[in-house]
Image (tube, rainbow, N blue to C red; front, side, top):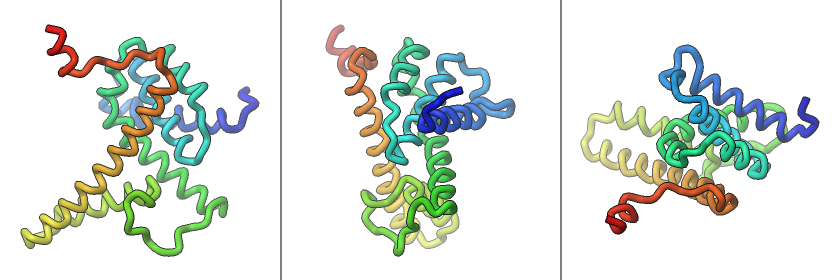
Length: 184
């Protein structure tokens, strides 16, 4: 019933995230509903940001409604990132298939210029190469490249979450262990 096409797409991403994270065979199917809704909306938010559509007004209030414990989003980051990468990969593939975006002419070597899909593909490819490598020096070089890509993915995710937090100052962030130890 949603008249806004962007919110229809965001809702599709949200429900897809539920199917991937909370389906009958998922390891996360028994998480509390607030946890599940927070994960699904965070995936939808990241996927929409990837295509250049800001849904923060809707997504942030939705997460705030469900997530009273702000540590949830921090503990769910790995799961959110994994499903977000899959959603972004599917979305980018469909966009290219439908001719809505030109495919890259040549591979980028600067990690900052790579799309989320290309970063994810590089990461997965390097993981396989590391497992197959027999030469210790080659394996070490591959692990270094893998680490660089991991840092870029983490940096992007942290940047998106920081922007989310800055746009929603009413959502209290959990205190770091250092802050807690200083209060003791």
